[in-house]
Image (tube, rainbow, N blue to C red; front, side, top):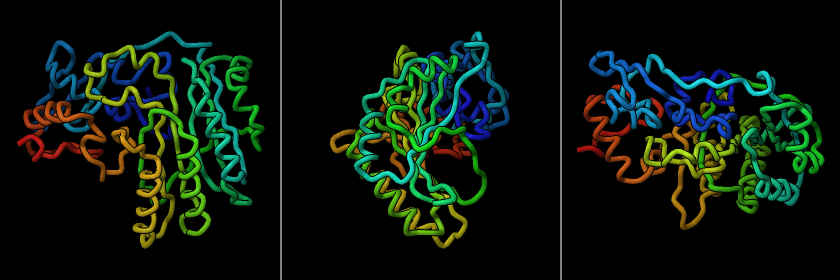
Length: 323
């Protein structure tokens, strides 16, 4: 429920949906909320739950950045699995051809993520060679021997190295995200070529990354899609291109590549989606919050609780939608 990147925090991640490594066992973060304390745009302190301000309770769970300051949450707690000792690390594939990347993608496409498991994706150029590298981050809520067996199909790909994850801070980091129902080997190959070519040619943005999250959704899908404002319970893969550079003059060039990367993963005939916490800001409302009925319902909440649009840093619900 706490997210998987550095310094994500708890409340902001949860009220956007709450993706995380423990999803397979605990469900989405929004499904674990019991109540919230909210400071509204008028300065009023209110309690929000299924019994108090119940309509706002629906909107808070998936679009929670739009209605006020969420100052506290009460959430479910669970007994620790394996004494709280989990297995986490990364395997990396360095300097692989597009066809080899396709093989990795097809393996991921067939790979079944169990309830105790989570898989993350990272494409990066790492020193000293700065060759394009396909990382797969592995998480398992259990002992090492079980984890090794569970991830055996990925270890069978013979990664270049097995390592622990690391974090980097600072710089200009605009992102373009997209949600996919499943891995698609051909589209992953195309997206890889876009990233590889750009980071190879634009030295000032060579550190730009591709990041992905893949979780078990069994527990999340036990909850009806209409119960919360979070609309993407059927999305199995979340991918985003993250620019990483210092020079502001590269903003437009990075933007072009970010949009191209995102477009390469869209499936013709299927509606596009993106997790609100991964959104860039240029997406359609339907891509963030779901169908027209959901947006109209959120609009009514926005009009009631924040008519002057004081809140909505991540992806605000605009007033024209609710007029």
